[in-house]
Length: 214
Image 1: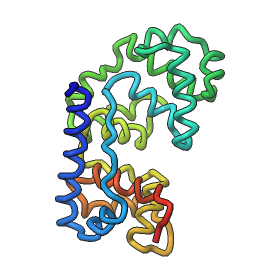
Image 2 (image 1 turned 60 degrees about the horizontal axis):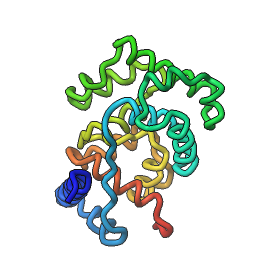
Image 3 (image 1 turned 180 degrees about the horizontal axis):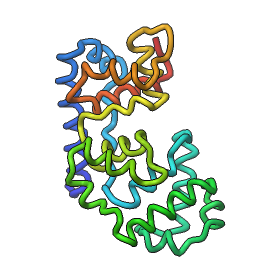
């Protein structure tokens, strides 16, 4: 078994284990898993490329974001480093499908790493709240982006990105609410799933993407 496959199996087992514990807090989750199965464990290697991918994905559908990221990878050739990004101009980034603003965010992040005004290895050692607070200081990284990076790249287990539209819709359907909850309401509804909110978020994203929803 390769290290990668072993790591993937470990992540999948962790999601299942945490969801089973969350089911004790909220039995309704068990019915959802029975219908949909367990969600995939999403994980990315922490670092510059993972944070860039979050920026690329902002306010885009999964398919569009994946297509732009594939072009970006081709442009920069893996592994993607801040030095390679700084050697690509705004027009090259635009041809990948990135907006002018996102291109500025990406170049800005690369410069912060080059100048050592941001240390992603140090951020990885922080607890979830501190890591998110550090990341949102970076131009172009808001709360959602910081939470997504903390979940998927840093592996923090108790994060629920309540500003995510898909999660809001999933929570609305799950809780049978008449209206879609806003970020504050969604966060409040998700508190009952603590300390397993990251795994529950994976399940709610799967629920949102299911073809048949109650």
